[in-house]
Image (cartoon, rainbow, N blue to C red):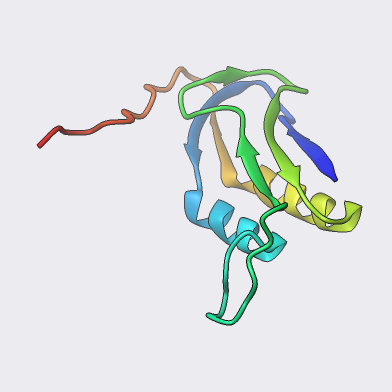
Length: 100
């Protein structure tokens, strides 16, 4: 099941809670909670927007890849909570901070 996660408002993406996204992916089965857990290679989260981007309602923020509609819906709600909004323009996060 592939389910888009849509923006619910207009604004700039101020912050994305990456830790919570990772835990959400783990709950889908894309990661391990315990060493003996099996990783499901057919599930996960694909992010579609980055910090600093302006979005409008119905913009796809992410796509959930899940094994069931229930899992996708639950993950979609969690992913929506990972995005923090601003009504003012936000400076994009640098992808490379420093070269050593």
